[in-house]
Length: 291
Image (cartoon, helix red, strand yellow):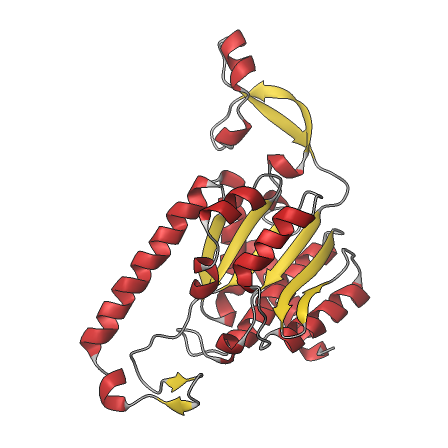
């Protein structure tokens, strides 16, 4: 276990908590759990900010008032981290940071919060030795083991891909879960409408997109070829603008697909923004206000 990395995660959470003068574990983090992951309690009148998916339309029509279902949280939640992997994670992000290290750091930060909250969590990755899938547990030893496994698997190329892992989950795991997918544009594109429909029937799905480095810019390294790109080609500003426009179009298309199934999404490109962006993700999921 990299204890320096663990200390960095603890410091990051403590810094955010102090800056916001609130407890992240009692506020933004708990808000990630919505109706489908909770037990039904009773009805109350709708208030601004409530999730419209919790509206009980049958009861509302009978009473003439808009009523929403209230829920009681389970004692423990099941959080499954699906962390993408492969040679593509040997590259950089759009901010010039190590893509694989950032993915592991994101996983470690959220897993640390999950563990502090007392919830059970597991890790799933596609590797060259097959699908790695841990037990659902909590505790420091479990956290340390999964951090080590995530780091060791991050550059391994598997056969299933992100879409294949989510499809396996929808077909074989019956427990209700919060699934946190840490991936990139290529990973999102492997998740089709059919998979989204199946995996969100009983689970909450949150997606964290790690922004890839652009193909056109400066000091660009081709991971597949193992060499830097030709400067004349890579430095063309017109090509860079076109690439950014095309990437935004692709990302917006994925957002539209995710909206239909209540999937919340954020993009992260550097370590310093992990906490703020993750809290934003939790907030979006709580309000079902995906933008």
